[in-house]
View 1 (tube, rainbow, N blue to C red):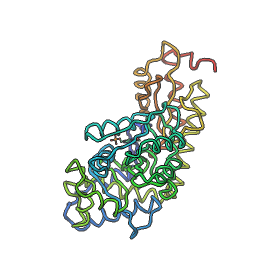
View 2 (cartoon, rainbow, N blue to C red):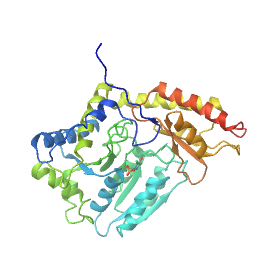
View 3 (cartoon, protein in one colour):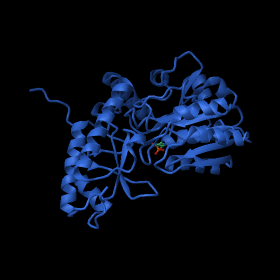
Length: 380
Ligand SMILES: *Cc1c(COP(=O)(O)O)cnc(C)c1O
């Protein structure tokens, strides 16, 4: 009898990245690639084109995809450190930790920033943005987070972008946890720069982020970068010159990503992947509700990427105890990050399926029984 490759016995990650990847994506890393070698650099070029195709942008047009070493944060910081002129001012919408992190970056760069905060369970209103931009003509750039992974809220970037464009400002979108699964129309959304990473909905392993932007816009930023290694135009010029990353590339992560993109195609592309995540989310929400848990966000603003659940109001419940019990049963969940409520989070993304979610819900039922948690939600 022929032996099959061994299954992966890792615990299943219900997290927003790094996440559970397929065995074949992991196996793609069992090679050493030379960063100078043409085979590797052809692969880098192909990956840059394939990401533009996923974004629905034509190659050979003015759009470029720039890969950057590091996690998603490095990609966001590269954009903010590179495309804002020395006397620019950036309005940042924040209804979670990632909007706040963009503000923190600007503070570190000594770049003028205007926070536009809304509560963590409320999406921003385009008419309010219209007013903010009309009031302050010195604002040059606007930042919005597509899926704010802090809660799982889906911000309406496609209604904000046209307002930004009408006012002649530059629109930067952090689509870290949504790109590759949730649709975003660059043209309709008035998106100038978009940032995402290898290890979220594209189901690769950590190692690099990528930025999509127009070449003429990038060329116009020459001399503005406040960082050497995070200089976006510098990175693009490196790829222009010899097809290479400027500094040591994440070779294994690139090899894994190539395989991850093939598997995205095989699944049917972003629409099919989004449908799988939606199914995971629906099964999760129904299962958790049937146990008595309540989710934090109203359904109208909830994305299918990650879901925040309120702690049960029972003194027998502790997050640490709950987490440890689930881990012993093979499931890894995520702590909450919300400032206004005690929550934990469960992600629906990665190489996980409805059957994995059902198994998780079953383990949740067992875990709370073991803990003696009986009161789950306050009466609605
Ligand atoms: C994951 C994420 C980031 C980047 O986080 P890293 O941990 O640096 O990869 C940024 N923004 C959003 C919305 C995210 O979900």
